Image 1 (cartoon, rainbow, N blue to C red):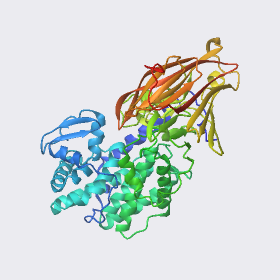
Image 2: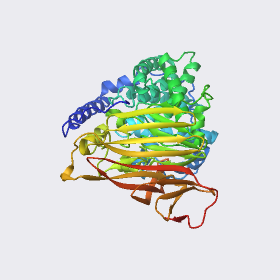
Image 3: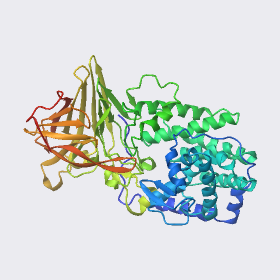
Image 4: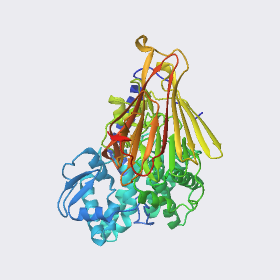
Length: 579
């Protein structure tokens, strides 16, 4: 049994906690602009800079060259300001762009562009300070401030090499103020570790008593929240593979900065680094990218490799299970299955209601995927629903959906009314591996539970699956219905095309640039190929999905079987027609 969601509460149950948090945030903002708080944020003043934290994320010098030419390309959108233009005192193309701009994530690319980039980075930092340095509801919000503190701490030394003494003191003081404010934010546990590590990196970067006090306070906070954010089973509490990778990057930066300060990292930090490194090994698939679940992007292989290059145990055997996920592998096939309940409460802001979803790689190429939704994507929240994943759905009922309205504005778009218990059994035998999975997401409404069996024949190099709906009680039987329609979806990667056979029982999946492909055979009543979308780095790409349809009796259930196996090299004429 892999955990359960909290019991259902009455309608409107999210309004009260939303009001309480809104009140706390409002009071914090009011306090932030008060004279006593402003005084506390600037005292004691830092004595210059100490360590030089190094962000291990790969920097793209092309980003810096574009900025030097006068164009900010962020979040898939462009703001043209001209050489040495001011991006701060003009409207951004979108809120998403503004978040990326104020986070300073572009600073690494600018510094990678050479000395000219460092000069421009200094100018942009001082210009930001002129407009937003005191306080601003957006620029100092948690989603923006956390990353800006981290990025500015890593860039401070390079910027200040070309700054006057007065400018260096201003940048150091600004960094201290923002890091102190970050630690005081009443934003809940979901980003607590990320906020604490950003503040700790800033403390390590700052000199004097100010840096030492900030570092001590941030490390104390980090030690308290890391066991919650990085549980003993490895991975991140949000169950997002990308979240695990990003926190690993941050903690490795902190560890290296502490070495510069002649300090040993706390045991909790080292323990979390080990757990997250193991999780990243588990989530890195044959194409070098991450499995993309629960709001995590697959990312680029080079980005993932930058973290794994620091992993001294990277050659160890990858575990079969981690963080509620299971892996199955044959000679060419690689399968990752979501085999646990979705995160609940504050951790569910990026969670998806897509129980028992799978991703399949064939020959190190992504074949079957999910929609790839992430918080940085422009896609609608509907991409977090069950229809957007490679799994089964029943009727028109979701297995969890994002919070809406005022509560969502305050608490974030948490996943509510999700599926609860997930059962997982793994079996191994010579030449074979299989999983038996089940969840209760539709039991209350329909009296049926979804069972998924995944069997991989290692010698034959094929995956066999069965999706079954089994009666577990009387069910809701809405409208006196005796049947409920079901669908089993296989979303295809944008670089995979689908061709359906003339008997409508098999579909040929052909990765781009390959002569051979993979047959998906099934015994469904109806098979269709329909349009789909897949998000990568926040940008949508058109793709296809295979949909197997049937009817489940509420008193007897139903099942559909399918098999994925390699097709013969080349195409036999008449065997399949393009959809």
